[in-house]
Length: 64
Image (cartoon, rainbow, N blue to C red; front, side, top):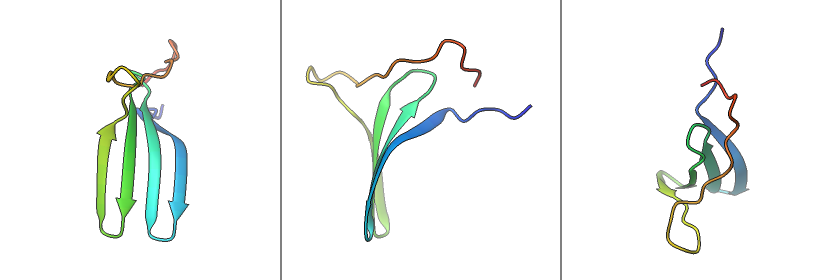
């Protein structure tokens, strides 16, 4: 049985040499922003209006 991926890409925006993506941790629901431009890239936690990590609902039966 294949193991499911822990992270799921939920948004992608590409423009020539730049990419911006939002990834969700399927175990915790925490949202991350990944940005890639040329040979550089970075990943950071997305924050809500209160400065806390943005969290998406997580499916209870997700086997990871």
